Structures are given as structure tokens and as C-alpha cells.
Image 1 (spheres, helix red, strand yellow):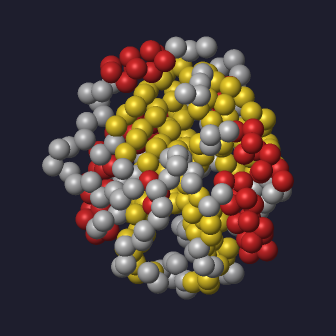
Image 2 (cartoon, rainbow, N blue to C red):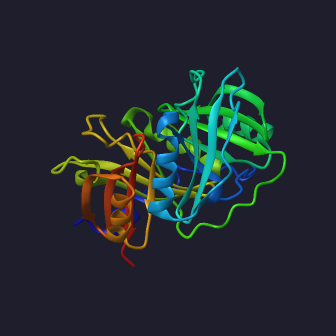
Length: 293
């Protein structure tokens, strides 16, 4: 078992590397507005949404068919608002325009034009310039390492319930891009590096007997874990974009199985964390974990 002091010492040693400019503005609203984007086939859509709320609780927003891209397209779209995280789900009835489908999350911002400008200044590249959607504005950006995100703003400010637990964005990057990604995202998000562990146990990413670098980050957008690997990962690691924290993992997995969810990797313990990998109807892969007090 690795001692927590490893992460603390690494974080202290590198504290000077991840510096947020004091003059930069924070555009975050709250982690309940950090929506994981899930793309599923229309024929799997309702089954997936039902299985997600059956597993985690919460409720679904009203379903509709919209154009959510700047070029012509049509998709079924709906939110799942759960105590452990929000998802924004798309079931396209038309081909999906490039580069949509590759963005992992949508972050609500207070001022999209200023946020895009700040992201670009911090090191992001704008893949899709700001465009109108039925309820506001959006843009798609990418960070070093190919980490794609959508920034969004609503004409009428949304009001989602606070989360019971904050999910983590699980970002896999190569050693070549890790430092640049962390530096740039921390600057944009006004984030804190909670820990930076150079030799986290490989069991956490399906590679027992090895180690990898794991960096935990927190900001007004929520939690993020950066997994720095050589890319030689067994399925489904790297396919999950979000890890959901629940109070009782075994009970949650029982609900998941009853809802048609497949447990891909059975629960395993690493430090004070017990985690499993699951696949929902329609193909969405997620990590689910519980943390001991």
C-alpha cells in the first residue's frame, strides 16, 4: 500500500509549477453544471437513460429533438440530474458533424466570450468557435494532449440541485503532454493540484505490477484526475470519461445490474478507495467508486 505522504510531498514539491495568474477571472459556476457528454444510438437512448437514474437516483429533464451543432443536424437530447453527477445525452438522428462526439464534458461558464478568450490565452485551441444553440451559446476547445471540452452559456441561468458527491473527470494523457495540460488547465480553471503521485499503483488502470502518474485537481468546475500513461491500456480503461462517487459501491452495483448495466471489472481496493468499471446499455463506460472515511 502506498502511503498518502507520497502524494502530499509530490504536491508540495511541485506546488510552484502549477501557478494560477491572480489577475485571471474564474468563469466557473459549480460542479453540478459540469455535464458529461454521452452519445448513444437512438434505439438505445431511453434504455440508457432509465438505467442511469435507476443506478444513481435523480431525475430526467424533458426530452426533445434539437439542433445542438452549428451546422445542420438533429438529435434527441436530455439531461440526467443525479446526486452524483449530471450527464447530457445525445442520440443523433442524423450523422454527427465534426468534431462533435469527441468532447468529453460541457462546462457552464458565466461569460462564454471571455471564457473562450481566457482558455485560448491559457493554452487551449478553439476547435469550434462560439455558436448559438436553442438555449444559449457554446464553443468547443481542446487542451494539450487532445483533451476536448465544450464550454456553454445559457440565456436563462439554469438551476440544478447541488450534488451529494462530486464526480471526477478522468483524463488520460501521455507523459509528453501531461505537464502542459495540467499547467494550462489549472491556469484557466483557477484549480488546485490536490496530489501528484509519480508511482500510483497500476492496478487502478488494469495493469497490476506497474505504476503510473496520477494527478488530482479540484476547481469550481469540479474534480479531475489526470492519468498519465504510456497508452498501453487494457479495455475499458481510457474509455471512461467520468468516475462517480457513491456512499456504498456494492449497493450501487446491485442497482446497476438490476437495470441492465454490465460490471466490466469487479470492485478492487486501492488505498482508501474501492472502485469498479461498468458499461451501461448503449455502450457508455464509467468508473464508480466509494471512498472510506
